[in-house]
Image (cartoon, rainbow, N blue to C red; front, side, top):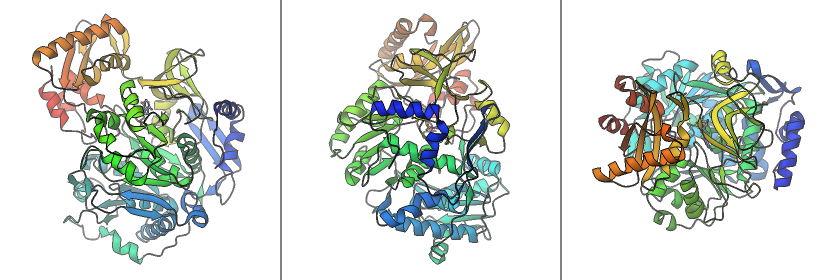
Length: 633
Ligand code: 7RM
């Protein structure tokens, strides 16, 4: 595969070229795909209006690029390995030939059931092969998929269905997750009481649970698939036709339906996958994310398949049946590239290295992380125990909105540095801006992370709300895309993403970012994790409330001692102004599925607004909220 960066010198050369002649750079990459009609215009944009168009005039279907074009060369190669939740259930190895057949059948079923180009299809499925088939079948028809994580509540599901006026829901009778089953069909039934756009739901049999099927609306999928024709002519899509909507919950307000379009997303997903993971023929690649999250869209489905790779889809969780599940899977399939989240690394590290040491991980070549800043301790553990100090770690910074990885080391090329996402991919132009909106040119600085030139993978709008798209990302710094993250740049030009900009609290008139204070706390040997929020304070305006999880249990006396030590550390390393007014030790912090701490909830608890916690169903661990409320200080 072309356009792979091979050494640091070449990296800087290519980056320079991409900056000087972005159109030429992206054209060369776009040329490597199948188009039914080539584009007339490479790029047209006005960032102030958040108006960006790539490869206009082009016509293509992304599934021809994910599937059809691989058939001749690698029809019998495995495209997807499905590893079930329960290790005693046999895996499925789905070749490119089989994937083609399944996706075509599914496309025919969707079409028969009334789905047309441009319609929205809500996909509420567990991590089973039908999820990939459905997503790709939508793309083949030209319908817009909206995947909702199978675990979100009925109300979260209903609001997403309503926002996009989905015509169809594809779901399952239930899902397996660790030792639990989830009643997906029951949740869908409840959600559909509050929606009016859905005409048909198609249901996959997975758990065999006895579920209510609404007459005239709900149909089992399997019989229909068997009868369906195994060829469906791919719909010709315009480059800028929407491919999917994916909801991302902002810190406040209702979730934003980020819209990604066909050609630009395709080019960027394929390009970033190839460069960041250095996938080679016959490798087996595994990303542990869920397809309900952007990481799953881009780096389980589209990126790997566009590159003709073998990609693993895992239905279960890292702790079932035991804490060595990830490493057992790595050994079983001889995984070469492994991509996960810092939260998973930290929670597995907590269980001890013996779970890792039980398994042969010598196949691993590249390790990746995504979702939040990775602290040094977790980075070192990952490097030492999983990568055996042999595998480069790619700390990949990106967002739902960016479509694909933006800042990350190129393995075997960029020297890695713990906690640094390092350099932008060629074609990505980051900038750090100060509060006044001026670019900070020097290195060794911190600022608000912006991107100053369009890239093909960027979201084009928020579904039904272009103004909100402009206001959120393009208004604060006109002419730039504002990420909402803060970052540092070191003397070598390496970026370190420090956290969300809105995680800033004004205490007695001083602007305090919570991330640096948390980092200091996390360095303490007894501390596993921490999150700081502000609450209003008579004298200081705001004061700091820290929620801290400990590595092991401590007596009351030891806890008091620790409180003093923590504030002592903060005073020494940040300043006395940043000392915590309240500290609560808790067994866990509320997290999203991708490992992000839900500060919104912690803020409400600190403020005592216990009746305003909002939707907690999107949490990985909703049960921890009660414990935190009970012990609030
Ligand atoms: C891919 C994804 C996006 C937010 C982003 C950051 C944080 C993601 C990293 C990171 C530090 C990283 N999409 N984030 N990756 N922070 N280092 N490598 O996570 O839309 O769900 O979240 O996640 O704050 O803005 S997302």
